[in-house]
Structures are given as C-alpha cells and as structure tokens.
Length: 212
Image (spheres, rainbow, N blue to C red):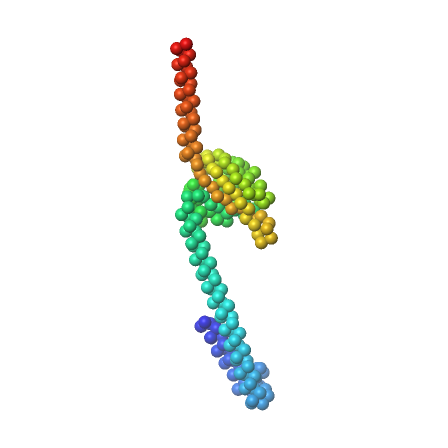
C-alpha cells in the first residue's frame, strides 16, 4: 500500500498548502478559519477513504490473479501427466491449448502450438480428414470417430477422438475441446496379425490343392 499512502500524503499536503497560502486559488484558502479547517479535514478524510478502497480493490485483484495462475499451473500439470491427448481449438481453426501428449505426437512442445493455425501444424491432408467432424462440432454436436489421419511431419496415425463443443456464455459454439487416443501401434499389430492369418490360410489352401 506504499503507493496509496504516498498519494494520500501528496493530496493532503496540497490541500494544506492551499489553505495556508492566501490567494492561492486552491479549494480551502477562503472562508473563516473554522470553515477552512472543517473543509480541510473532510477533504483529507474523503481522500483517505477513497484511496484505501482502491488499495483494497487492487489487493483483491492481485490475490485473484495469483489464485488463477496457481489453478492454471495445477491444470497444466494434470493435463501434461495424462497419456490422453487433449486440445482446445477455436472456431477460426487455431489451437487455444494442447497438452504435452498431443504436442509430443506431432514433434512439438505445447507452447509451439498455442495460437497457431491447425493446418500449419497437421497439414492439409490431415485437416481434410477431420474437417467433417469439426463442422459438426461447431454446429453444437458431440462427435466421436476413429480415423487414420496422415499428418504432414509424422505420417499416418490411427486416432480415436471425441469432440465436445466449447461454448460462450450465450451457449454459442466458439470452438471445441478434443480428447484423442493414438492406437497406431495396436492397429498396426492387428494388421500384421491379419496379414499373417491370410498368408497361413493361403498356404493351407495351396497345400490341400497339392494333396488333392
């Protein structure tokens, strides 16, 4: 409250100087001594109350900002610890938030993505694949899908995603929040297993033909 105290002292000193100096043209340099004294006391008291009120407002705002920063840091810690990929995107197709798992999949740090156009990060092919789901979520629909998405830097990934509308206070969709799971390795293992089964079936079929 050092600034508030200084402001009160400066205002009070100005008033006292105006009171003591005749013809200064300041608020309390006219009237009887008693009237002047009363006006001076009222002025100083009013100033003190006003500045103390402002100091309290500033202090509350500072505390609220510190609390918000602490909560944001806690949320960042939680979202960075989860293996599920999380993003928040705006209606103009920019990243508002991305957790570490999502950024890592694309070869980036989370801060590299914030504010960037989605197409600049994932490429035109990937955006074309997910665009139908983006259009639906921006219309207010909850969307889930499984797709092979070809990213410009890391190639194709098999993703399972859920989109939820991000709404303003009027309920209008202003973007979406996505929860994404990368099951690429499991999918590739399944494809390899399917291929092996087909090859084995072909060998068995050819063997039967030779025996017959």
